[in-house]
Amino acid sequence: MARPFTVQEQARPMAGSASPWRPPRVCDAYWSEFRHCKSLRHRFHHYYTYGTSPLCEQWKEDYDACKEWERTQSTHAKECLQKSERNRVSEQRKFTPVWELRQSPPPDWHMPLNQDRPQDS
Image 1: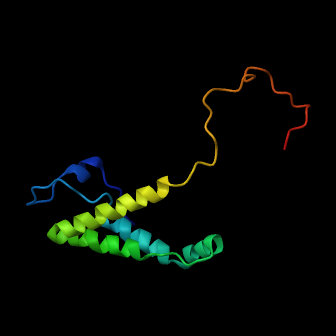
Image 2: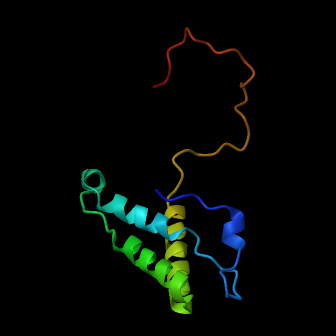
Image 3: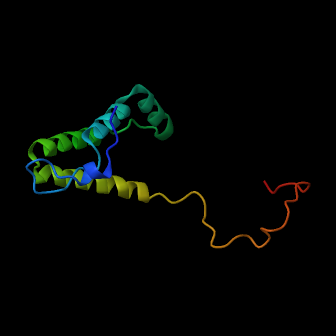
């Protein structure tokens, strides 16, 4: 199981490195996500929900890039990880919220609830 890393570990530079950049996740987290994505349970759930098999190769590519960065600290691996994380975050942000956020409370918020009246459902 992947251990969570602290902010100090994220900010600490690697030995012999001048750059304090670290991957946004530990490499084991990418591997865990890949294994989860390949699991029979997840594949079944994804197929049931979306009608297609999940695409798991990005997690594998991220894991390989993370390991390459740990070994060689190549700029190519760093750029691949950054691009992948940016894409992942932008994918999460493009969904609209389910609920409309209120700007102010309802005008009758202080009134007692009328439980005898039928709901408008």
